[in-house]
Amino acid sequence: MEQTLYGLIGAKLGHSYSKLLHEQLGGYRYELIPLPTEAEARAFMEKRAFTAVNVTIPYKQLVIPYCDEIEPKARAIGAVNTIVHRGGKLYGYNTDYAGFAYLARAHGVDFAGKTVLILGTGGTHSTVEAVCRDGGAAEILCASRTGRGGALTYAEAAHRRDVQVIVNTTPCGMYPHVGQCMLDPTAFPALEAVLDVVYNPFRTELVLRAAERGVNAAGGFEMLVAQAVYAAQYFTGQFFASDSVIPAACRRLQRQLANVSLIGMPGCGKSTVGAALAQTLNKTFVDLDEEIERRTGQNIPDIFAREGEEAFRRYEAAALADIAKQTGQVIACGGGIVKTQANVHALRQNGCVLWVQRPLGKLATGGRPLSRGGAALKQLQEERTPLYRAAADAVLDNAG
Image (cartoon, rainbow, N blue to C red):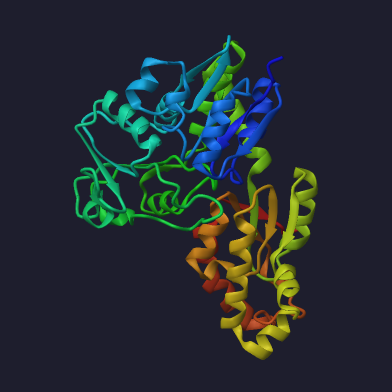
């Protein structure tokens, strides 16, 4: 009897949301099947002991010879990300094409007449190149670390000042190695849009930097959802109304996974509000100051007294970097978290940032190293208000 198995194969799958997504979409059990080596991937394909699988990095090209039939689009691209075992045969498809086309369309990115720079040379590169070409791109450039096979090196690519659209197809910036970026978007004066196929975190460092420059920028989460919807159609033989199903699935999964980070003056009530908010949203509550104390074995005033503010900021940044790459949390931050741009990026990568405001006279000051009240507290508020405003997506009034 043929084994019933739906799942995802790839070298590393710790970052994947596919199980959550497919089980919500199709109602079938979906497994993550890590295959760290090429030999394991080949052995899996030779056994054919599955009903249908998705394929991710780095096996989208390796699986092609194992397919009995391949749809024309997937064959032309040279990458397969969806395989269905039907009647003893393996059928290969590429739903990344439609998924990436959906991402671009959802964010108003038009490739017609544009100079496009694609980062990376793997299977997803071929898919993105096909979408850009079919969309009428005037010139499609490719960049890689080595610059082999006609590609530019990243250093060479940075001198192409005519680039209008950048698409990242590499794993750079993907969980758990968040915060990495191949290129600085500020090097491209004609840049209009940035798309990154990485979906965990929701916003990679590349996307965050581009957005700060006012460039239209989006991560790959909607592409993930869209390609999964199209793959689920092949898995089940059912038709989904994609224009309504994809946005609804995006909202549902983001609501479940997104972090909510609270910033604001010391004593404004971030911890109290955060704990209540976490309970309401069914998310994990994290008090960053408590996490720092747990890691260092010291309370915050003692760290300031013994080692100074600079040492505390290092502990704070390290703790935040670990915590913020996770999902489904409400994070209450210390008042000075916004003093470092890298911290702001860490907070914004997986969700929204809320600025908790409370009148100066109502701020709690007891036991807080930098806010003893009076003129010093007022000066601190004046210094930090622009930073809070720049970092926040919205304001929470905690005046009551």
